[in-house]
Amino acid sequence: MQRCRFEIPECPPQDVRRLQRELGVSGALAQVLVRRGMSDPGAARAFLAAGESHPPSAFAGIQLAIEPILRNVRDGGLITVHGDYDVDGVCSTAVLLRTLRRLGACADSYLPDRSADGYGLRMHTVARLAARGTRLLLSADCAITAVSEVQAALDLGMEVVVSDHHSPRADGALPAAPVVHPAVCGYPCPDLCATAVAHKLAEALIDSAEQQGMLAAGDAAAARAALREDLDLVALATVADVVSLTGENRSLLRRGLRALAATTKPGLRALMSVARLDPARVDERSIAFALAPRLNAAGRLYRADAGLELILTEDPLRAAQVAQELDRANSERRQVELGIRYEAEAQMAALGDRAAYVLAGEGWHPGVIGIVASRLVEKSGRPVVLLAMDGDRGRGSGRSIDGFDLLGALTACATHLADYGGHRAAAGLEIERRNLPAFAEALERHARSLLGGEQQLPVERVDAILDGSELGMELAEELAALAPFGRGNPTVSLMLAGASLSDPRPMGEGRHVRFTVSSGGCRAKAVAFGGGARLPVEQGQPAEATFALEVNEWNGISEPRLVLRRAQPVAAGAAAPAIAAAPALPALPGAGARDACEPLPAATAGRTASVPAGLVRAARGGPPEQQEHEGELVLFALP
Image 1: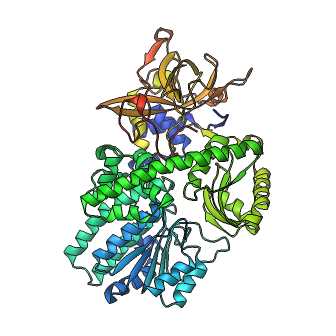
Image 2 (image 1 turned 30 degrees about the vertical axis):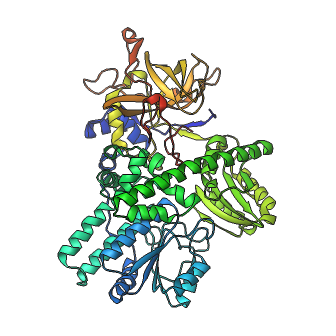
Image 3 (image 1 turned 135 degrees about the vertical axis):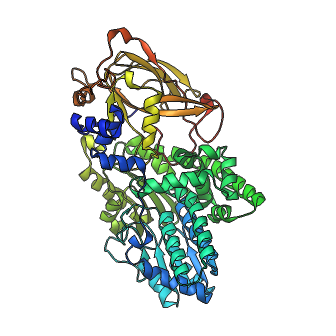
């Protein structure tokens, strides 16, 4: 396990006591809230409630987008929704198509081919859509940077509306068309995924259509009910696109998970069936590790419209057929990914230690290299760009680490690139083969100037410091109130004071290990995934260790589960920083030692806390020893 930097935010004891008193929560949960910046009881209460919501009118200028859409609905002009080949692009396309058809529009869709078209709106696509009679081009999850392409569409006589959430161009230029974009339009939650943007636009279209007499009151009510059901698509895209699970996104995902559990869409029911998921237990992990990879697989290897067909079909038989197609594509994707990963790891070994890696290969599938880049970032703790070379050009995908702006780095290296775009954490690019060496050197030099020493170590943020006596089902269930977890709201990281690990026992054919952790006079069973059968520190050696405490459900039984996140030896002759930074929490009136975070009396030493080992419940069923993670979105796996 790679060494890390433990980051332990300040946690004033008076703030912890205040939250305990006013919210009625435990000292552990109060620590988490304070360390995550919610020492104010009102802010903490609002976060736990996850009820934030804003109207579509909060998008500045959204009416400018509604008018041409409804005009073309009335006039019968062909509206083409141009989406993208990933989950967010497919789901945002589906939301807009379903709403337009409820309004009586003549509407179709276009999803680019990852290999033939590449990402986003392209000139040849604009010409093709104009030739086939598109009157209004409505983008979904793309086109905020397509200034020239949008102008070309306008010149060919089409109207254009852009709905997107990606970062605009560095020069600030925007398409000469109405834009619905959370950051550009000043929406209170700037981190919406494209499907959430589409859902807000669809809501505004229904409201305006009713106001203009295009929908009767009963039809408008039915359209709104159907749109609420489409929150299942918002949930899928919110997790798959790894947007920040804060603000309104937190509320949208909670509501969307409920909609997904109760969905009547034959395609989504069939997809859950092939993934062996119980709809009643679907959560953010189910999406990240089972549903999203299958929806993405077709677009990565074959046709993105398979995912769209799955979502839109009303035929259960056809839904089952397409779901099987996606399941097979996902299995093939895993094999392709493994082959590319082996080659890329060999290149990394040959390059040695670098601040950033640019790796290129002939015949690498451009639809899979982003997943491999993510895996290599996890392994190396460095930004990684992978390039699939084909002739004189290459198409690439990059992933970054905390604290390193990958999009900014590509901008700094833009003279070597043919095209690029994306976010701080992930980006795509195209390059001429002759520029590859210069780009690799420029990116490494840029990363080296910003990253050095401990900055290159991954950061493990500590949310609470406990001893073993505080672990158990009650705390596991209380921490679950912070869900859904993901980017911006990671799984809670608990540091156990004075921890030591012992009694390792291999599991999962040696890929994982179960062991005993001792802290505060107590012992608990725990498990570590993906690091092999050995402990990350020597048995009995003082360790800085963090864990996730979760509720595990298997065969109708709910149990707490302690999962290792990070562990490394305490530096010789030095006190563990975690222990030194732990706040002393005085006991509340009537509280015992456990509430006050004090060591247990000697009489309790040797007691074993009820925290059984077991693997994370993933898509496939079976006893814990047989379960595995199977998704490409590493939101919850160990670093």
